[in-house]
Length: 140
Image 1: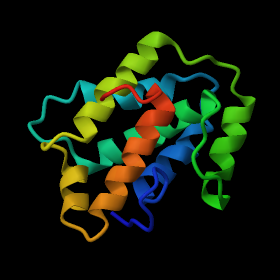
Image 2: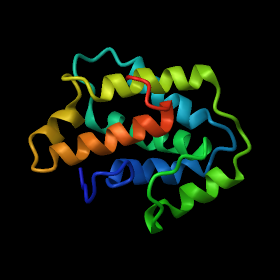
Image 3: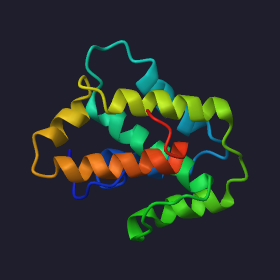
Image 4: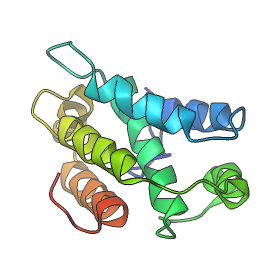
């Protein structure tokens, strides 16, 4: 995976996912992406699914008016969010909570990759900040 930053859009999987988002007028892709993480029956959650889910979680945060950093890499997502008139529902927030728990679990390949890097603590802080922006500080 090509990764250049710790934020949700700092890797190829998330950027590819963000490009696909523009094909949707609803939150279908966001929800499906979270379902892929929650419903995975694999013992280890694969990094691509986790990376895409972090991007989906960032979209949820932005829809709630709690955006992360905005930069050229997020411009298209920010445009989509501005055009999207959908509300984040309690069931979607529950899926967000469940997905975050799975992404940060010991059995997450993405977590393991970051844990083995020199940026582990930075990634943890970034994910915790995203969690707070999505769930209002509720525990994952």
